[in-house]
Length: 428
Image (cartoon, rainbow, N blue to C red; front, side):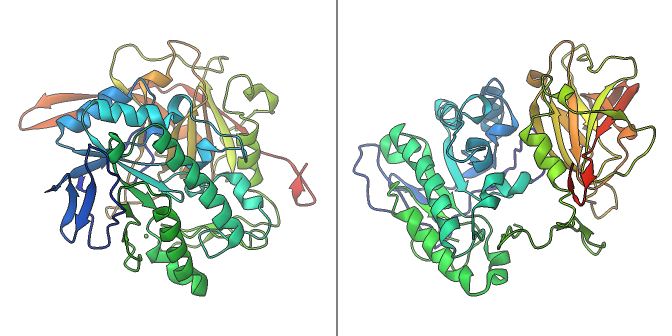
């Protein structure tokens, strides 16, 4: 799924023979069971249509309208991943406020009469940085992600248990009267399982048993995991660390690997920028921004976008049309507006036509202020930030099909960059 403010994907909730069933909860609300044809809720087999809304990619003010549109479109179930790195950005320090208020998001779904599929993961992929893992997890001694590795299993179990306990305490599972009818552990692991050798299968068995033993009284699934053990249902990029990063690279199709060599610790420019929150107004002045002077294609570089006048911010366009960024000239990275991430972009990922699979990225109106908006992005691979433009987007009904009309609202944008200085291969 692409990294946009909100993802709504219409599909059938597929729960095959391996879908989990735990012991009956005994609540008057009834139970959720399964057979080879799908879910059975209160004794009735149901065909459910589901779609994704990722709560951190929108704001609480947006949730009611988005959920209402999903319901109007015929969905029965709202699915969402649970994003470990936003909930525990620092080890042992948790955040469930604002855009990360998972309980509030689920209650809004319930208020509108829909079910919830809670995809805990905690590896989620989802075009989300580090696959949803917090950066501090990398520094745990002797850890290997997503394998039969005790340090990883310990931290994974701790987070999953915290989420499940929170849901139980809030009464959000279906037998308790809540909307959650199914949960997911791990995510699309089968396509990378062989890469982990002998530690893959026991990890799958452990993850399934760990989840079931949390006794949620609703089914568990693993998503496309044919060897998922009973009673759990049956792909994503391998995230692995063993005694430090061995090699990090970015590759698309048959193109050459773009290596991020560990010897230079170049990736730390991204980590340092995020750790010091240089994408918010108060912190953006703590680093030395310089004009790029038409020099482009710098990997691992932070950019601050401003108007060509001496202002470091920009105003919100008038009207209620959707506001978008055209990132055609960029490759892969993440964008923040007024300190809020609008998600990751991957313009260099091409469709079969050879064109970017996505180049316009939505900025939610609730992220914007009438004046003094700050736009910051970090580019991982290169690109030309001088080609970034801001647009409004409207839909004009012209039979027989709607026609999207984009209007350039600010072509007079300047770009400043910030990169780290290095000494002896390390940040100075």
